[in-house]
Amino acid sequence: MKCNTLLSAFLLFFSIQIFGQVYTDKIVGEKNQELKDSLKVEKYPYALPIWGEKVAQKGYKLPYSAGLSVNYFWQESDIIINSLEVGFNNGPLYNLDEIIRFDKSSVVASSVTIRPDVWLLPFLNVYGIFGKANTATKINAGVWIPDADNNWSEVVSFKTQQHFNATTFGIGMTPTIGIGGGWLALDMNMAWTDISALDKPAFSYIFGPRLGKTFKFHKEDQNIAVWVGGFRVHISGDTNGNLALSDVIPLEGAQEKVDNGLAKVSENQTKVDNWWGALTPTQQKNPANIAKHNTANRALESAGNILTTLDGALSTAGSSTVQYSLQKAPKDMWNFIVGTQFQYNKHFMLRLETGFLGSRTQVLCGLQYRFGL
Image (cartoon, rainbow, N blue to C red; front, side, top):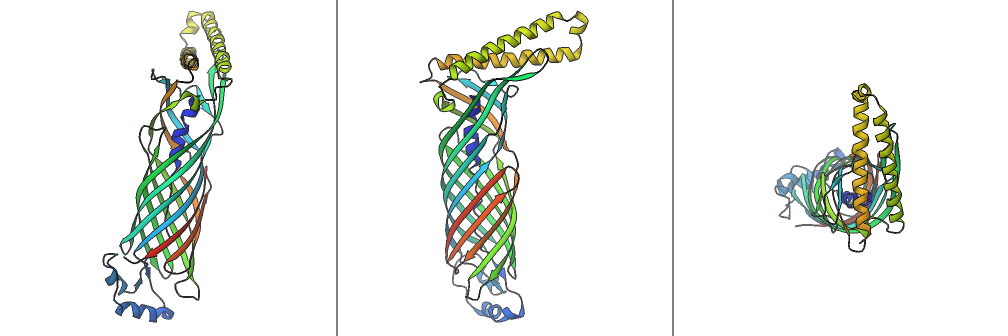
């Protein structure tokens, strides 16, 4: 039930790193002396980057100053949810951290983005991000309650898969340095993803250092680059939203699950009360028994409140809504990146990159066109 309210938090894993591997390269080596000498006397024909002509005349080969990329991105991620609160039909929100457990939940997102960029400075590229995404969220969760012996058991379980569309926009920059075909790039961007189920666009920040090498082909300006690096994603912690109840849980069989859950809560509450009543006054003052008694009562009260409220919402399921608040974070902030880019000429590049290790897997492919500005 509330497990599905998390799906909208998962959607903001539409977090994309769209670094296009071009850079300002310091020409070195005797075999490149002719090229280096030609750069010193050649007039730089474009307005960008700033100081482009001065840098070129010092022996740096500059890429075309503007570009447009089209990228396809796929990602599967795990996420951690905390401070989960859920309510129905604009009623009070109940904190469910203690009684909700999640198992094998994941989000899969795919997107197509357009990225215009310019080299503002010879070693600094700035860009914008505009894209559309489709997401599928699979969530398995359950309501767990304790008994008199502090043994926890699942009384209600929910499985669901939800699909959403999202729109994203963002800005980014990539400081780079290249010497003799070897290069270092520090890509970073901020993006806001607009999803109908969220009260406001979800914010994400991406940072990706990459270290690579470009290998030239015999044909002028044709090369292939390979790199390794990392991908770090930070997601804004607070998420609030509102969903139709029918979009949150499968209604078929829901009433039976809720009824069985309420019966189990009542049964366990009776066991806890009987256990506590059977203790001597001295045993009731034992801190361990007090803690166990308080924990059981608190969890059973929380489970009873949410199930009772859900029971009422199911009676008008067609018009009922779910409100939620939560904090979320990636299960792993970092994963490993390897990639390659084939440059056909200074205008056209084709890029492929994959990320793995940890709890996040991703693939990106893109086509880039560059021109002078």
